[in-house]
Image: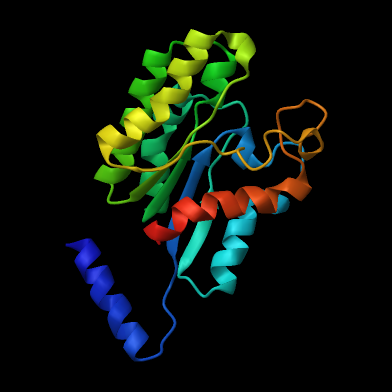
Length: 202
């Protein structure tokens, strides 16, 4: 009912050329979205907010990403974030820390499934952003980890971006000294990559 009323309101305001308040787009991730090691305003979610504003799209980006976050941690706090921000689109970018800590893939899959379901039950469209691990974690674990994201997305009918870092993964100079977190100069490329999967949801 509320979605219908919001849509009608939007149409009426558009017809009258009256600006309406923006809907919230929630980015719910870890350090790769929190802007670890760089000014937060240079992170790809901040650049996304700028792009949406420049294009006149009625969205405000709420970046609720936390460095070090796991899927379990995200699962514990998503409900509160949904209640607070009432997003119409949620970008879930979690799982990297599960993999780096060698946590059970089955546990990660269960948490990601719960995250997608919570967001959709709150009325939001969902983009699930995947991650990959270096080969030193072993071929079996790496394969099962990577396969979790498309499996969950397909099962829950969520949009999928298979690998956030794909445009820069092979470029050492695109990462900070830790070899894990992208530099500020690489954030616009990450945004372009995310945009390709996000745009159809807007």
